[in-house]
Amino acid sequence: MIREEISLHGSDALKGSLDAQWTPPGHHSKRDADGARLTPGQSRCPRTDIPSTAAVATCLLIVFLLPAYLGCATTPIRKEGDADLRSWPTGPRWRHASFNALRHPITWGAAAGAAVVAAGGWDKKISHWAVERTPVFGSVAQAKSASDDLRALCDFGMLGTALAVPGGDYPWRSRFERLLVEEGGVWTASSFTGLAQRNIDRERPDGSNNHGFPSGHSTRAFAYNGMSSRNLDALDLPGTARIPLKILFTGLAAGTAWARVEGQKHYPSDVLAGAAVGNFVALFVHDAFLGRTEKVTVGVRMDREERSLTLRFALP
Image 1 (cartoon, rainbow, N blue to C red):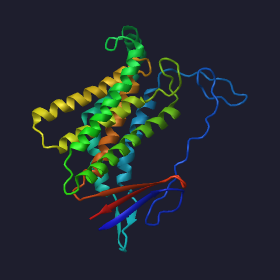
Image 2 (cartoon, helix red, strand yellow):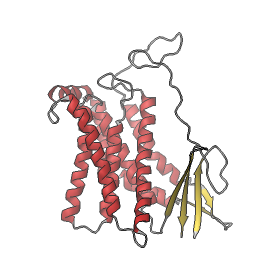
Image 3 (cartoon, one colour):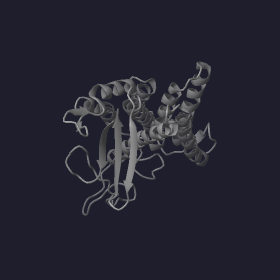
Image 4 (cartoon, rainbow, N blue to C red):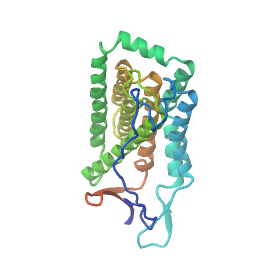
């Protein structure tokens, strides 16, 4: 058995393991009444409510093209007890996962929709209509509550389908490893969205803060949906059962996204961009780590004192 270890702790150089430390978020700079960052002596600059098409395109290009770049520049990890070097995952695996995730209809369809809505200036029109009419949820408050409930159902869908996938000789260990990878993929997508929200500085429709683009709820919901879809593909189900289940889970994710628009928390391009990011990252992570033909054993260890997280991967 070949063991490869990645330890997230500190900033040590790669020596058979890769270390990086997570630190709590620091204090943010003060903002004015509208949420804009101000420094002493600095006056508030005008800000547009709708991000430019360039901002939308840049955000989506980063998340879509970065994995492809990583596929061409994977870091070799030394196998324990062996002088040879082996990349994990391999470059072809990264590229294959990127291509599969990019060509998925939800990924490119939602990305194209976000670009079209932003370029056409339809964000405010659709948002105002949805908030005034609330055609699906009946009120803004109910829409906000429904977005949380629907997102939770998407999470349960991923958990349920992951537990249903056969685990071979060690079923429960295999299921735990699958859940670990899938939750890690959702966390990765959500982290990218959070970073984009803090840097793009887009005001929400209700003016509560400037973390509007892309939508975090939509990102997580469609990341859960992407994982659920892959889990359903791994189950021995007839098409008459698999297709309705995929439609159901996609409907829950779409409902989460629309609830954020009707709840006056996001513009349509926000939730469409979130859907594209969540779906892409989920499929990319799943296919890169769980789409392998060889067996992969994943373990985790947390050290509270050193505030570190260690992931171990064992390859046959």
